[in-house]
Length: 305
Image 1 (cartoon, rainbow, N blue to C red):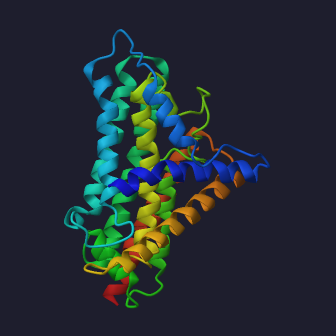
Image 2: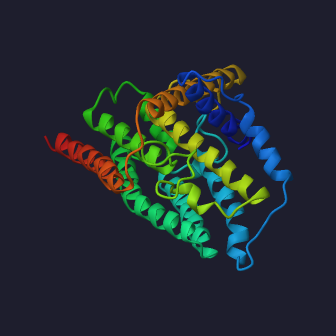
Image 3: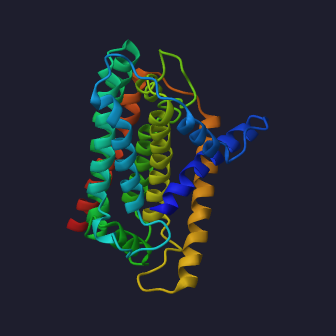
């Protein structure tokens, strides 16, 4: 839990730094997200007069749910103390719960921006969650379990090999991760234009420590999906249960390498592509849904032959 808490802002800083360098700018330091969080924590909280208790407690609920979900994903080792609860369905439920409370908080104050952002967020979630469940179902058919340590062990074994269904699931998972983290082309995390923003519209009324919790939860969510892709599809370097200190150290170094490569690839993808219109997002996530469904059907067909 401490590892994901310490590395989440660093991953966000790496993505911003690489994007700035690709645009021929110097950019801020990779440690700037840590300074931003500390600055927000020191600021005073400003609340609307009609804000309810839900508006005040939602940032802590979102942060707690996202932190637990990110900590459940095997990062540098499998078979940890809470490995029995590291289930893909449980992680999907935690992320969905955080999104649900964020959408409620966006509508709580009654601003037009909050309502627009919440409606768009629910639209995206209604397509991203079924695609995620199909991804989980496909991985469960391959590994025989939804437990992440078991899936990582099966995917690392030579018995799996190269499969078209797994390639489709990988592409679908990347598309869902982009949509869930409000990244380009679905959303631009740096914009404040009312016609295009989704996530930022829901958090415009937050300030101080409440905004710090939401920003921290966003960094943890990005780390969660990068760790999930690395755990399932690049499971090399994970320390097995009962291994020594050297294996855990090697796993930690390999995990840092996965985060670095994931941040560089994300920055390069966002620099090379433009943001799409909001009305084209359903087609984007519909493609992820179809890829997950095709991956599941291919597994059924190949097993019946």
